[in-house]
Image (tube, rainbow, N blue to C red; front, top):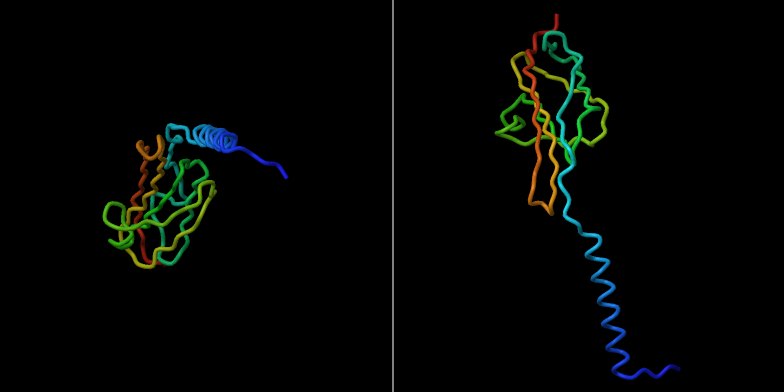
Amino acid sequence: MVNLKAEDMKSSYFILAAFALMILAAGCNKEEPRPVSAAFTTNLTDHTAMVGKAVTFYTGDATGDFLTYFKGDKEANTFGTGYGTSLEVGTDSFNLIYNAAGSYTFTLVATSYGNWGETMEQDVQSVDITVVPNQ
């Protein structure tokens, strides 16, 4: 059995604490936000969709830490007044269906944070969609 003196124990704790502090400091660097882009395209012609038919949104070029889309068919999910739906970064495309004729604004928001949350970058892209009855 090893018998350590109190001074040796204090030195060991000090060295261990200093090492832990160095690891913590090395892993917590302030970084600028990742570049953001809310770029997307659709399969629509003249921004017109038909009731009940899928609209495809191509989001492969969208970048950021977080992507959120707002369908815009109700106030509750319209950009600026409601809640959006999270979209996984790197999603190539997805479909939405509008169930009533009318005019809607689809919006994609790309957001990144940096410098320990002190800096935010955001890009917003929208498209006005006219939904017509299915004929």
